[in-house]
Structures are given as structure tokens and as C-alpha cells.
Amino acid sequence: MKKSRIWLAGALALAVAAPAIADTCASPGERAALELNALQSHLAVVAIRCQQDGTYASFVRRHQGDLTSANRTAQVHFRRAYGSQGTARFNNYATELINAHDQEAARFEGFLCRDNAALYQQAVAAPTSVELIRMANTRNILMTYEPALCSTATPVRATRAARPARRAR
Image (cartoon, rainbow, N blue to C red; front, top):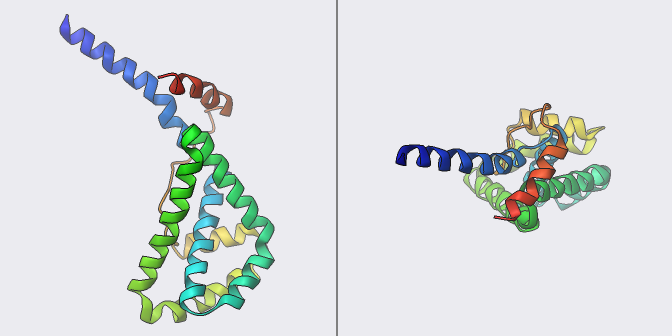
């Protein structure tokens, strides 16, 4: 009798936790936005450490719309995935991301500027955000948050409907 109650409690806990786990996945657009955030963070750190403020400003001016959209999409992901904690978690993510890029830059200080000069030129010249995301992937730009891609079979409404039950706990 006791084992069945334990099993039932475990099954109930999994049923309650499953929507929360599903909510932390990212749509392809959200994942792309997070990758673009990571590239921008990396380039910002390189700009500071290599005194490339003008090049970074050119990058931001050229891709301002895409960078702003990616930032908004990332914020939406965090709010969808973490509910009322979404804004705080997004802010923590942004801080962790820039700190991680700065620590990585410090490890490669002697080669940082030389190794990223071509990346900067490519980023400024990139015609679209798709090309920027491709650069982030091919250069293995560090990401501190990498949610799994959501299954296309999971409708967005199902994850949204699950949120009130999570908050009611």
C-alpha cells in the first residue's frame, strides 16, 4: 500500500512538473535570438578589450533592428518559460553572458584582437541576421543559456495553459 502511494505521489509530481519543463524549451526563433544575443555580447567585449568602439558602433548601427528584435524575443522567451521570474532571469542571463565572454577574453588576451578582427569585419558586412547567427554557430560563440528546441508538436497554447496551474502551487 505504501509503495503505491509513493508511486502515485511521484507520478503526480511529474505531471505537475512536466509543463514547467516543457516551457523552458525555445522555439527556433527564440533560439536564434539567443544566439544573436551571444554574438553581440562577444563583440561588445572584444570592442572594449581591443579598443574597437567605432567598429562595434558600426555593427550596432547596421544591425540595430535585428539586435533589438532579438533582445525582445529573448525577453519574451524568458517570460514565457519562467513566468513572473522571467524578467529577473533574463537580466541574470544577460549579466552572466557578458561576464562569461569577458572571462573567456581574459584567457585569450594575447590573441583576442587578432583572432576577432575578421569576425568583426564579417559581422559589420553581414547582410542579414541569418548570416550573423550562422557566424555565431560557426565560430562557436559562447552561450551561457542553451534551452532545447521545442517540439513542433507542442502547441504554444498548451504551454500557456499550463502556467496558471504552476503558479497556483
